[in-house]
Image 1 (spheres, rainbow, N blue to C red):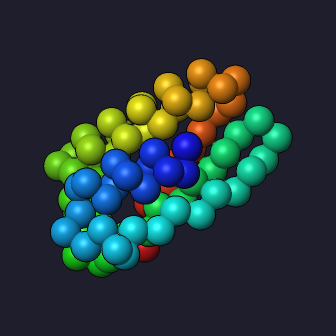
Image 2 (cartoon, rainbow, N blue to C red):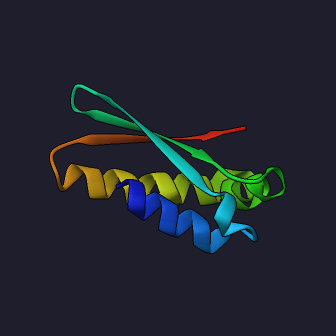
Length: 76
């Protein structure tokens, strides 16, 4: 799932080399913390949060296929 978020976020931002994803495992939940360059935060969040909501939907679908739950946080 980490690789999926890295790839998707890398396609959205202008500086893909600055994309970082840290994973924290808790029981059956994975918390993925997404970090991007300060100028790219708006691109990842999108207008009204639409882009980040779509990323979370894709991530949750991928996780549920593995019997897990996933949470995506965009960290400043």
